[in-house]
Structure formats: C-alpha cells, structure tokens
Length: 152
Image 1 (tube, rainbow, N blue to C red):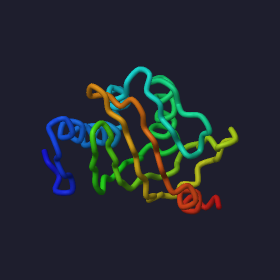
Image 2: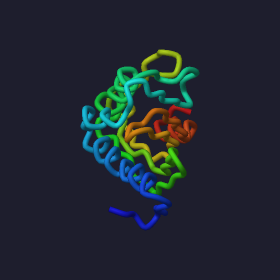
Image 3: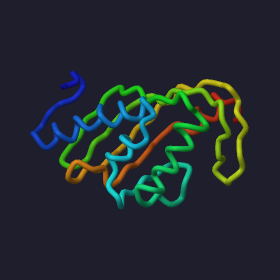
C-alpha cells in the first residue's frame, strides 16, 4: 500500500517504507511481540532523555513495555509522513496518549499518573538492514510532553 506522502525511489526503499505502516500498526495495537519483531537482536535505540542508547532487543522491549502498557496504556502514534534514502527511514508523527500509570522520570524518580492526555510531535530516524531495524533515533518535543502533563 502506497501513501501519497511517500516517494518511492527503488524497490529496496519501497520495501523498507512498507515496514513503517506495519510497525505502527503493531505499536498502535499494543502488540509488543509483533512490534519487537521489527528490531534486530543488537539494535540500538536512542532517546533524548537517555545519555546511552537502549542496546539490544530486550532493552528496547523493556523501554516500550513501560510506555505502552503502564504509563500510557492507550498510547498511539499517528503518522504524518514517511520517507527515506538508501537504508534510512524518517517518520514524522504525533504521539497520543493518556497518562494513567506511573511514569519513570529521567533521573529514576516515578511520576504519578496525571490522567492528562498528550499530543506531541515526534520524528523517528531508523536504519534498516535485511528488513530489521538496526538503529533508531527518537526526537520528541520533551518540553511540550511535560507541559501537557502539567509537569513543567
């Protein structure tokens, strides 16, 4: 399925871009097993709130499990557009959810549920090799995220 916002340069890129809708579908269904199938065993995941990347599929799983099932059990990602070049993909999106569970803070403290909803712009830059994500860089409006939760 081709999105009008996606320009297809070649078959490899077309295949890589098709992964975007598949991974977002798994994320939005909160199917952690299917979601993790997209990540290579030794993948790296960089987040703006962490100095070091999450290293390996298990560490990435733990990071997403907290957000998907505990802190924001209704969390969704709404794709605006996706494009890529060679082995790299870029996804512009909106992160949506309601903070109804404890949220780990950047220094390890726990932020209690605020029951507030978020709608935060984000961007993901992902490297794909042999149909698996080997590296991912998450860029998100952290200040907007905290402000919407009333935590500024």
